[in-house]
Image 1 (cartoon, rainbow, N blue to C red):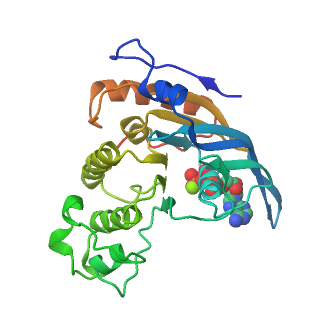
Image 2: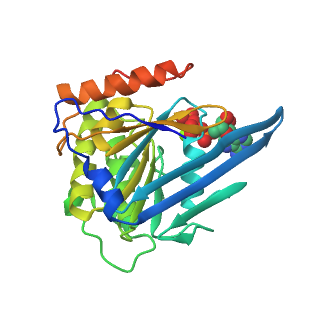
Length: 270
Ligand SMILES: Nc1ncnc2c1ncn2[C@@H]1O[C@H](COP(=O)(O)OP(=O)(O)OP(=O)(O)O)[C@@H](O)[C@H]1O
Ligand SMILES: [Mg+2]
């Protein structure tokens, strides 16, 4: 059982949009008592222990926690890339048994096809012509992948993930390798896309400010075994500025809780 800690600094003392969404809308994703362990050379690692979580349609949920606490494992299970040892994952009420186009994953490394240009990468697997102008990519349509900066590669990855119009985006530290300025631009992009297309997003990050900037809720994982320890609703208006004082106050609260869990490897500074 995890704790919900309402942080309402600089915001109205009403229930959050995400709370209201959860009451009104049925869960887009339902994670019920999910456990997962791995056999390693030195024994068994309990990566997740009876993790339960409901994510509403159109909700933006961020997962933070120390390295090795099971965030990627949970994301991969939701994606259908890994099978849990116990428990269930339901998407739209149906069990997730394999990866699907309606739930796409975006990783830290862009994982693009170097033999295709930008257009080809976004088009991959699609019959439609993608609209690259909205993603600030039109100038680079026929650029080779190796000619792009890290930030541009992640924009291409994002465009490719969005091209089949998935309802759920699963993002595993997608901006971790980028510089602060590029990350800031991408925070703007992702907030715009989320607002315009109302995706359901589960976003993993080590960066607490990033989580407070993007999420309706930030879920704090505790390690070994991985569990959801605490939940922090973020009620700040959007679009959010990563440098705002209110946002920093939220991030400070979450960081304190993260540090109190022990060996937290946390990125507080940007
Ligand atoms: N395929 C695997 N084989 C063995 N152990 C694994 C495997 N995948 C994950 N683990 C272990 O499970 C635990 C959770 O790993 P996971 O990658 O989910 O953590 P994480 O929270 O995403 O960490 P990070 O923040 O460093 O990415 C870790 O102890 C890890 O070593
Ligand atoms: Mg990970």
